[in-house]
Image 1 (cartoon, rainbow, N blue to C red):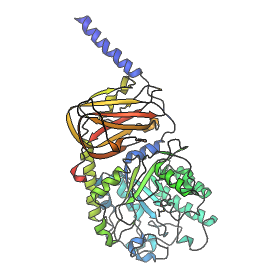
Image 2: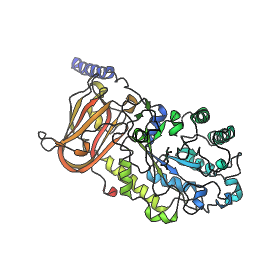
Image 3: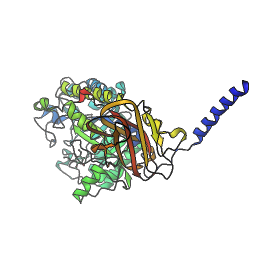
Image 4: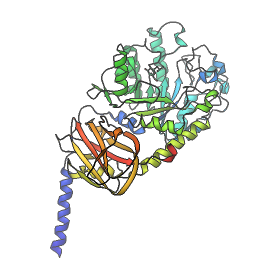
Length: 483
Ligand code: IPT
């Protein structure tokens, strides 16, 4: 009796030891930095375009001549912005501290053009301070947009002067040193063609020295310093495929430039994933005329699927109005999107399946990890074996119209061709057209399709640079909220 019990315990110990000893696959190709990994996991970031344009009629890019005095929000409440983010499940936000008009939302020592000469709070206010304080109180990661293109300053001398270089540097220092931790900074390429790489190089050091974890959005001449890239349009449509890697962007060839941004390149020489900036309204700044044109929940879901669901991060703009508040339509639609996303992905219909796999590394890397709901555990194949078929047998037939797959991004972009099929009987297999001949996966890939009813589902990993390493795969029924 004693011996038997001992041997059972011993047997378990051996199995556990074998599982532990199975080593993890080595990373393949380029991999994300800690900053990039953290950024990917945010999934959605809010953009707040707010400034002097808000107080003009239908201006989205002011010329820097509007009098500072007109900036006068009657009820600015950054905590109300944060309430919007909380109900929308958004963990991070970026404020336009200075847009292209040059108007500063904080009392910069280096210009008179800003809140300190506005009617608001008798010139004693600081929107950036109120924003970062509210972020801190609500556990939201704060980011700052400091437009490199400044039409107020640019009225005379041009950008190549030492004066402009130092002017921007001084303002960047104020923001990077005086407002706590900054998680992202945005170098808009709009109107910024004249700004040179040496200028950005000088400004880059200021960001890095003061904010080591700050993600830099860069395009065009700031691209060499970018952690994340623009994805080529403002409509929310990331390419398919969309690789996190891309080749250095050459602006002279327009078509290659946009393709490089929108799709990236599997063999690209830099890891700079795509950020998707899009406004919840037609314009970037608030205009009452657009109150009836706020994107619907369905439109937002489409954008989520073609951004977050295409290996990108969504930067969704909520423009505060002349009171300094987010309009209720914007908040309500974003909150519904969040509820719909949660409801959809709470129910992985494969969760109770039996799992069979043709390329299993063994140990703690079994294919069951794909459906355990835990992003920390993952499935991996054997070294040198890039193909794999993972078959899921559900306890009963289920109807679904959506799938999601996620790679272990720390281990690189391994898989570069995949598909998903379904079967009612486990013998006759049917393709899902939207999930056939696919290429990139990355942080998250989502496909939607006409509902199918199936008992069996298989994920085919058809090619790649190294054995697969994926942490999640699921099929789902889209929530009614999103329709
Ligand atoms: C566009 C810029 O060219 C690009 O570099 C990036 O900053 C982007 O804006 C951000 O949306 S210009 C825009 C009018 C498409």
